[in-house]
Image: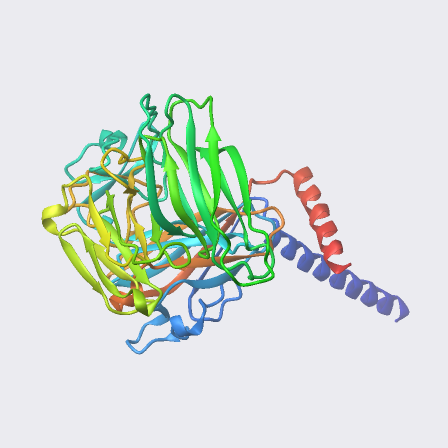
Length: 490
């Protein structure tokens, strides 16, 4: 009897340890699969622990059964945010949604890259325009879309009137001027702007009259900077700060000169980084060709000069958005032959060229009172001699590529899978940081609210991948994760 009891106890201990080991092995294999891949698929009804419903609530419906009898979540304004949980340390996240877009021609999905600045890396996610009349193609390492009657080599064209980019690099243009052209320009640009410049005999020389309209704001926000780049290489950085932050008065205008010599041929990007309380009041330049964009926010001249500050520049944009922040700046903006009254503040107006202006390389955009925040799909030039195209125009929600004579779009975007009844499966991927346990995502749906559109999501597939592991690598990964878990407990 005692021997049987001892055997039973030993058997129970063996079964218990086996179950415990099995549970541990199961958990470890879930977090560290030898294949290097874990996939989670689920209906987007709010019950999954892997992807939370999109927020904030005033821009979305509650996930679950919707009034028109489908299950998921509907988005009616943007941007919206969600969080994806990671089952372990992985190098790459692929996100796939089953979606239906109603009056929403374009979507981009982003991942948070800079928590302090709250900046996202956005990637192409869905384009309604590319579902008809276009085919996916690749030529000499360049991926994108061409017309159904086009040829893959169209992707290599650099014609700015006929080729667009979307989430892809523009081809490089190696330019250099030899004859300077002096200009003295009152402009009142507000906040961050990007200047695209062709050097003259290897020199960039521009002077900016700056003014800070709000020295009393907290922290270091009254510190700005100019950064000159060629591609991803930083050529120089010039900080800009204003002393005397104990009062709310405007600063006195002051001048900042940006000078660089010995530059190679090409296009240089000079970024003025600041909030909208900093003004570029005046520009002195000997550069023959330079443009601004895609953001162009010419403000008023209050505190600098008396009178109204009207603005008329050129743009190669086919589409712009315009927004006024102050009631005393409501006006009618002219975009080529188009006239658009701006009748409400804090409302984004989407403007497209008149049909007779579509083929014009550049046309005028005029603001009788200025103070309109404009975002274009191209660039802005002070005159015809300054005008040039530093990069190809971007595909936007307003773009109609077939009607605009576009022959190719350079983009990493992949053809979505048609599921019938206007539903599509769309996907993209992101590289993941080494130590992340969760990641915040953002869905960009430009213009959805003004169109009264909707973006429906009914199901989700998340695929987490990393290189497959050998037995030794598997054990090293287990130990590294154990150390990270111990540090989190301290």
